[in-house]
Amino acid sequence: MPISPGFADRRAKQFDKALEVRDGTLPALTGSAVENPIVVPGLTKQHNFCAVVGFENYTGWTAGSAEWIVAIEAAATINSTFVEVGRITLNGDPLKGATKTTEIALSGLAIESLVPDAQAVRARAIKVGGAGSLKYSAFLSS
Image 1: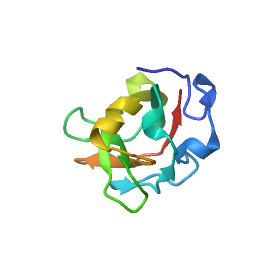
Image 2 (image 1 turned 45 degrees about the horizontal axis):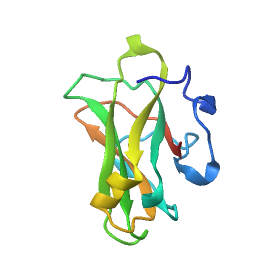
Image 3 (image 1 turned 180 degrees about the vertical axis):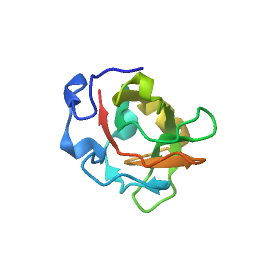
């Protein structure tokens, strides 16, 4: 569900650097990768919020067999086991535009049901098949 005309255009949602889980200025990924977690006190007390994911097209996209998935994971602490709490498959179809922004819907109640006392959150990029490099950003917003 596109919400913004461009990858670098963060005006679609409120942006707070402290809630950024993937900096879009980092180099493109060539394989699956986990980002450094951030601590969000009261994460499970939030009502409905989202992870806003911006990304550029990538080569080799084939729906279902060569694509990228971005997952949001939560844990009680940055050193404990992380559990996936949301994910989205990124549509790399160049006909959909060169850059895209989409959202992963999240809620404190749903996260609490999976990870009681969750305070740490991170992004994970998962490469499926022969998809090309992925350049993306992700941040939490209301």
